[in-house]
Length: 99
Image 1 (spheres, helix red, strand yellow):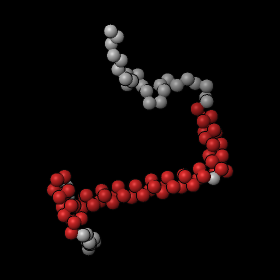
Image 2 (cartoon, one colour):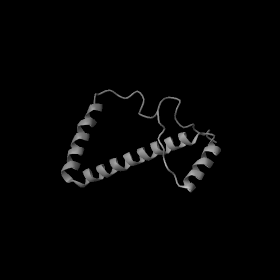
Image 3 (cartoon, one colour):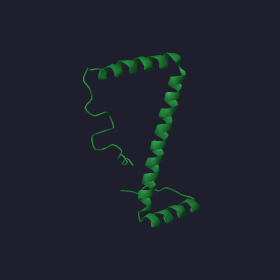
Image 4 (cartoon, one colour):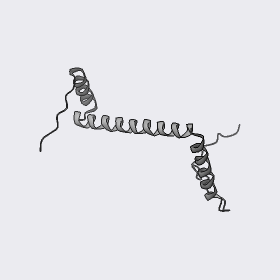
């Protein structure tokens, strides 16, 4: 199986070599992480642009609001929450002793 070849500028190669030595990881691992990070960054940028376009359209914004109202009603089952979201017994902030 052939190994793909990626050409780098001498500056980028030197930086990658130093980063690999500092982190004690291979250049291949670092390049893989960088590509994945860049992929995720682009995905979030695309999602943010699409959401901004959607919010710019009054009809779309109204439809989103209506859908959220429907979903908000799913929690109205008449039962009181045992533990509010994000807070469980013994997991809150510690109180300072009163002086």
